[in-house]
Length: 136
Image 1 (cartoon, rainbow, N blue to C red):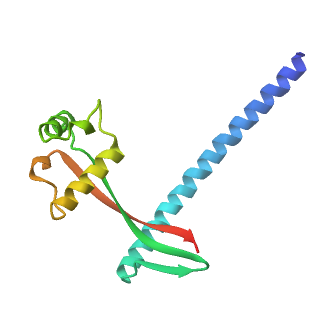
Image 2: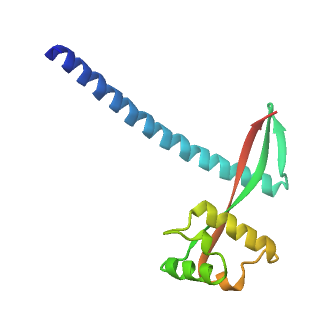
């Protein structure tokens, strides 16, 4: 391969990487705008007591997702208490965040929407309300 071809490939690779960086920055800006609009719309829908509506051929609906994680400095204690209470199969070297969230959701459902007492002090939870969009 000639030096000229190598230099052309180098220029093309550099340009492609620069374009990728530009697109990643644009994606960050768009994601921030999506988060801002999602929060504003979900708040407006909650205030208007709307759980869903249709507009311009799309259905907008509120959805809620539970996220769970071990409390700071309590990861090993959480693993021990899960094992002690018969849920050691959730524990490997770590508990997958989605698996833990599903487990906590199930436990809350079985306990009147409350965390079981044995998990108290080991788990942080929060719910994120967002707007989903699907075509009709």
